Image (cartoon, rainbow, N blue to C red; front, side):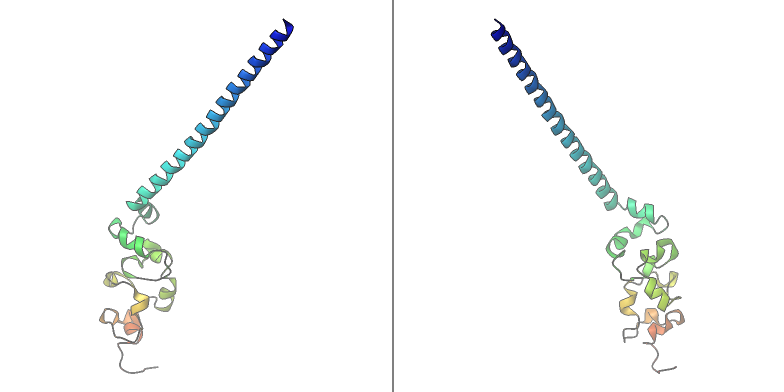
Length: 149
């Protein structure tokens, strides 16, 4: 009878151990799925906010949501496109225009708001009438037929 009782006790202990293992496995899987779901929800939220311009508007509140797609294409690529972003409100195209503004400190502003890719256009050997103003050194000298020093 003691042997049967010991066998029953061992069987009960094995059954309890198996239940604990099953519960433990379930909890591990549930936790993994919950964490993964939270990560995907967070990434989805960030992507949605980015696609709607909310992150751009939060970082550059006075830069204008109407320019979001242009900013998405141009900000942070190391090239100064000028135009509506080469101002203090837009942090000089988030730093892309630092070199351009050092070379041509006055060649920005409202009258040049429609221009794009100023580094490529200014001082390239061709006179661009949009830059043929004193602030832009007459297109970096391209619009001056004489070599004046």
